[in-house]
Length: 442
Image (cartoon, rainbow, N blue to C red):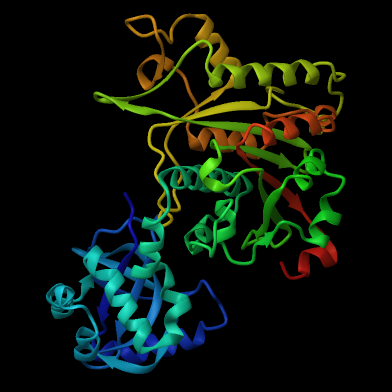
């Protein structure tokens, strides 16, 4: 599982002025990076990395967001540093070591001797000590602190699972919209009792925001969202094209621990197309993962509700507009995930099986999803064809699948039905704004 890491970089004396001068030149570009070749190390690019850099002898002088780069020669890799930040004063290694609980000092010293990645259990203690010695780095290092780790450990199991699925729905929506998932790594446990993952991200509007409500009041299904007892909203922006925005709302009527999962409702405003994804957790069985259900359980009830809604959608006149063309106008998809674990230090998406609802129905009717004792079981082995993350994102991003323009206008009841199910609905709207709206602050 990807975990956050910290790299202690002891910058060679003959490289210090070169790197610092280049960092000053790039200061106006937030994502610009300076780099240094270091011995190859293990770190997932989906997890956050912080660099504790020594530009002074025997002292930590700077911190930066790190990124593992490409090979820099045999046995070497480029360590990229973004937003290189000077401490208020260089903190001597000995002083930092002395501020650590005794049980972590030997592990810290071993890393100091040669540089490299701190042991995971030592990371939080080092960060807490560093923040205590220089409070200015608190916002930058908060995600790595032991205090944050302790707050995560206090989350109830049901809350952790629901946060995991909500984080996944947001990640998929960002991927479909072509917007970086890096901001998922800015999540921190919010004060109080959160209702959704979105509340742990910075710049989130909770419950209501007048501008947001006015902006989306004519969007299909938004009235049902705005009537929810609780919702949070956040707008994301494409780094390379500021006109591309994704506004995400997470709405629910229950406390986080009482929710029963999440659904993603994705709307492409350009093509006026909705896609809806329902998530299901698979369980480990021997050497594989399976999803089991009974013919009268809640899963079958959920499928029946989709059928009722589909019966209404097919009454809409056939599409006659080029932008309304779809390979399939059934908006419902199921995603079966073999592992649902809440890891806020991983911006990756869950691996899993995407099935269009129509394909699941054919599989169910064919009896292919029957176990050796006659029970209902879905697995990688018996499902046959399925969509992976990349294939699903490609289809939805181009609106090759989803509701037609006419069908989208009639989805108020669909959204309301999802809200009443006890799940969190992640309502994601991709827009392309123009003129003054595109140049304004988000």
